[in-house]
Structure formats: structure tokens, C-alpha cells
Amino acid sequence: MKPKETGYFRFINEASPDGVLVRNLGAALYFREKGMPMVADFSLNAANPQSVLLLRELGMRAVTVSYDLNAHQLVDLLSSGCGPELELTMHQHIPMFHTEHCVFCTFLSQGHNFKDCGRPCEHHRVRVMDRTYAMHYLRSDEGCRNTLFNGKAQTAARYASGMRRAGLSRFRLELLEESPEQTTRLIESYRALLRDKLTPDALMEKLDLLDRIGVTETK
Image 1 (tube, rainbow, N blue to C red):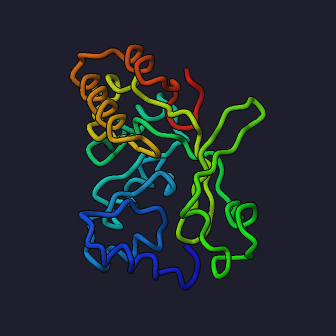
Image 2: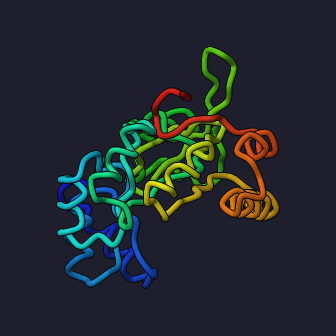
Image 3: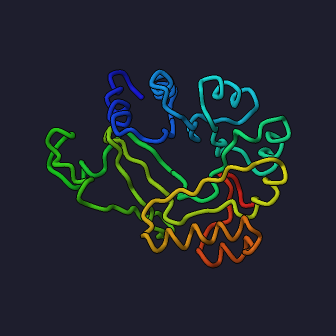
């Protein structure tokens, strides 16, 4: 959030959502005053008991675990007394890069900013190829900032059973470009996983996923 960007928060509030996934402290203060149910997102970087406590004191009903934690560190956090309020992003296209620079405006328009670019981000889908020829998803937000998401989704499925035993009970699935059919298949697969009717290896093979928790190594 930057100065004079509360207009984005007003837009969200006027939509009367059931709750808000809060990504910065400015949003936390704004929506707390509105009495809006809030969940702290990964960008608030809850990585230890003190940061979780501070976010809870700000009014968060749940706190997304920092992507910097590996499985062992997450178990340590759970053993510290945190647990019911923590939420793990189980499935996601991990955000790889975030920039003020708008690729859509630069390469898909003759304009210079949102006033004259014609909003190509609303009409085009853009993917970026890396040095390994993998294709990744580019998205533009309301502030014309761009985020690049990994083209292949990753899963923390291998750690779900252990995390549940350690006290974690909130798991999130994040979607990006999935069709209704793909979404249904994905949700049903994770439900089967949490009911011990599908193994992590079978889920990863079925959905073609990377075996990774947060931004840490696979093991």
C-alpha cells in the first residue's frame, strides 16, 4: 500500500465480502475499523509466535504461514502454542516476482500509464518463458503492478498428515487459471487426501504438481 491508495480498500468494502485476505498493514487497519473479518496473507510474513500474536491482536481471525518456513520450522511454530489460528497454503502457483513495471502497458500498448494504455491487461493473457523454456503466468493488479506466478502449481500434500497431527487444521487451495472442471477435480482430490483416501504421491501424479512447501526445497 502507498499513500492515497485507500480507494482500493473502499472498493473491496463496498462489495460486501464475507471477509478479506489482508496483504499489508494499511489494509489491516482499514478493515479493522470497518469490522470486516480478516485473514492475514503470506506477505505479512508470520514466521514466529510473536508475529502471529501481533497479527491476532490486529484482529486477524486466521494467519497464513510465511512461505519462508520449511516443514520442520512450521512444526516448531505449531509446537509453540500456535495452531488453531494458522493457515497453510496447501496448493498454489507460487508468486515468483513482483514489480512496479507494467509489462502489459510497455509491450501491448502505445500508452505510458493507465490513463492512455487502453488496459490491455483486461483483454490479453500473457505468459513469460524462462531459460528452461517453462511458461509462467503474468498478472496485473488494480495498481498496475505485475506479479509473475509459477506456471506449474505446487503442493504441500506430503506434509498434510504431519501438520494435522501437530495441530494445524486450516488448509487453503489457491486457483489461478483453472477451469470449473479442473477446480472440481482439484477440490475433490484434496478432500480425498485429507480423508486418507488418496496418497500424496497419487495426488501429485494425478494433478501434475511440484512437491514443495512454500519457497523452500522439496525435502
